[in-house]
Length: 177
Image 1: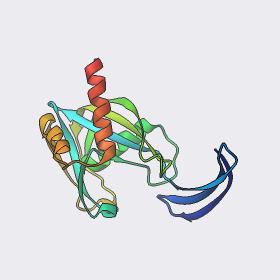
Image 2: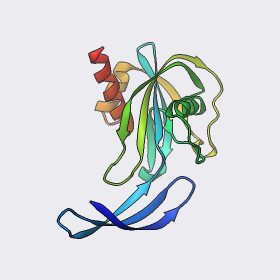
Image 3: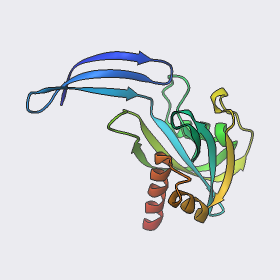
């Protein structure tokens, strides 16, 4: 596919929406509407064979959601994904990681958005103060054992796709050793 034109439909500091006119391989034309967001970092904070999860209200789906900490910079800074992971972990949980291991890259919804997410495993954790953003009011944090997290996924209590995908990456890496 070749982009032949693009129109910016909306933009704020967190997201932009554009409509691209495209030419398909057979020469016909089409349109893609794309949500652009910066690359995110997702962190799996692990200790004592369990994980720290955060719970927050997710406005688009109208309910609270258990997830691994994740997010983007609130400005346009260009910095290594590891820096973002350390910052998000501290911001949302107050935890600091002595060791941060990259697990992989996830395309969050490639039919809709350009946003991708770098997933990390955080270990050797120490506690510190949280520094949540104004929009993260009501966010809570709790530690769950590994079996509890897996049961929450099976029971549909955890439905956040990046959390489930990152947990799958972790399990695959653990199996390999």
